[in-house]
Length: 627
Image (cartoon, rainbow, N blue to C red; front, side, top):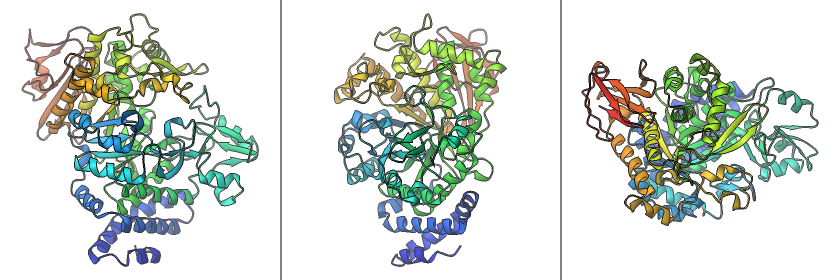
């Protein structure tokens, strides 16, 4: 591939070695780039050349310290798959008020063992209700109340010096109605009208609606909004003020490629690609997980690899287990799309096991998933900023003799506290009477018995530790949600903040203050017990090479119904994880460990392993990592 003339001029003043680096990267990633845009557009040569020009401009502007980071990451391509990766996610304003304040409060995170920090949406959103920051008004500016681009760059530099990679959201599916692109579209600019899906009447929207689900049926029913200024209908999957972008227009791709490199040059190391499943619209489908989504990701990734190869992509695709693997790359996209994806299924099954006291369904569902592509890995998690949708596959449920709808109903009842004997204090989010779907809001503590009513504190501590031990042993980057590390029961006054009153997800987005953080050194406090337990998990995990993401997860069968058992085989040895999801002692055959080649030593809680009549008895809600 010859350099486009525009790119050649941009690179002309660089030192020879720097220009040669760009040309070598172009040689490496040009096939990925051209293949992707050929799938998407009728003029692939022009689009690919324009993307190379975007990459050249970003490469020239990239600071020297980030060029050095690029070299380091290329020499250690598995850096994000290593067992010392341990994550934390928070809203800047709810943790430290500002980006500068964030930099002053990193001791709490380093003590926890954090090496991966996801800061929730911090780019400039629309005024007022903005879906927690996911209605972006300007991709090139930080929220003014949080700071400036320089503050973000300074924080990224500080984090990098402490061995922490910065993660930031990039919303791809939609922009705020107030974004300049949408303003120009409403003003009659024909070129910008083509950046969105706009229809003169309901004929086409109604045809699409026949197969489209509703994301927010309570407060944003339907997928299209009549805009009074336009006098036409606009595609708005999430809210009437979030306009879906038209990715079949190559101008959208070119603009976002430039945004990706802009953020990378501020020091962002991982971009969370929000709502990525929704990018491509196709009549007669649910307009999720379309093949073109992966081609778009491949084009963006190839462009970023040329300009800033230290930058990784994380797919926010909260989809069914069978649709999830392509986001890490399968078939022609293997190793060419997102590097990281959310393991939503694991999270759902952790909560399912705790409620039911049975590992049978989880063993079947998780054990039947295809292997993870070797170049990618998961984000595993117990809770996040979002509600929990009970993504139990009907086929998996039927395979274990239950119904998917019935089990989803049970989980919603259990975690809303409506089921007799439940220790949970969650809140129903977005009840859809048509489908029976009831999602749940709540913190990890609130859902395990350590909520405002403290229904079962001792059991809750064990369940919190168990849940985090499962996700940390699974393979990937375990991420702790803000407040969960100190056992926050949730924000009981969530509805009193302006703009939050209609969205109970703010119950599990509590402010974490200096006073809250200080509580984790008070011996015997909830905060101390939970923090020390999770920090212990991170510290032990960092020293276990068999928890590298390249070691496959084997879900062991023929195990007691109350025990989830996994094996992680690595050249350094094998780790067996035994997790009792019940409130009673459960057995596991000692001979089974010997068959797996493990000379039993439990390293997580340092529990002494003693067989009785050939059986190891696992205490209630215990998590054992045996090596």
